[in-house]
Amino acid sequence: MELERSTDKRILKSKKAISNAFIALLKETEKDEGFKKITITDIVRKANVNRGTFYKHFYFKEDILKETQADILSEFSLMLTENYQGVRFSSLKDTPLNDSIFKFILENKDFFHLAFQSIGFSNFQMDFTKCIEDVLTNQFFLHAAPSHISKSLFCTYIAHGLYGVLANWDNNDYQEPTLYMAQQITSILIFGHTDLDFSTEDHGSSTIEIII
Image 1 (cartoon, rainbow, N blue to C red):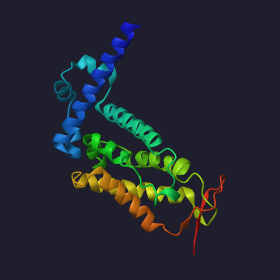
Image 2 (image 1 turned 180 degrees about the vertical axis):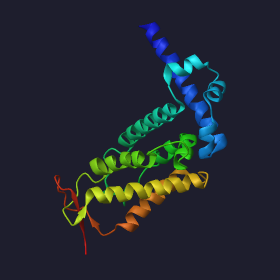
Image 3 (image 1 turned 30 degrees about the vertical axis):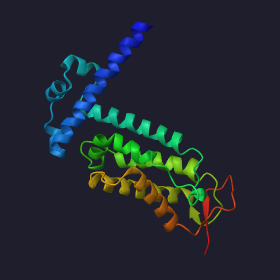
Image 4 (image 1 turned 30 degrees about the horizontal axis):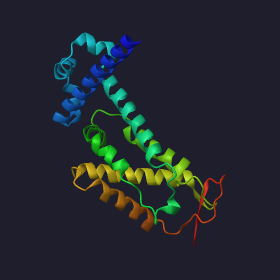
């Protein structure tokens, strides 16, 4: 058992080294053509592993990005669930959003910078916003009064708007503090949708009530 754990740690360490090396090489080029020019040799040299170790984990360099993206988004979804559990739109005026989402982006900014710039990554925006939509639908707007606005479309609208804010934050080199960003998002949500009424909860509804 101890040997298995030791082996698992070595595998994770070598895969992480390869992933980090590839991200670092992409960041050095920051252009789509850079992705095409990076070779397996470049990656193993940067990661300080041999080619045999690389091929134990990956077939192609594209596989590194797919796995890295999947891992990051899995961690991102878990973070959203753990840190925004019980948060409701109707309580934002009294309890602003915390800055967990912005801290996560900042902690993984090398990855997100490349992803926001679409360097080497495929379908990132759709997969990322889907994580946010799931939390919005199943937690943030869990109980909404009936109306003429689709909850699904409204959550998609907010998720893609948040993506744009995060991409802009990256474009500004993350100059604004995480707490400031969280406060701004809270204010934007409240300011832009003050006519949404959540005073009447309907546990089975898929729409949101608008006060005209």
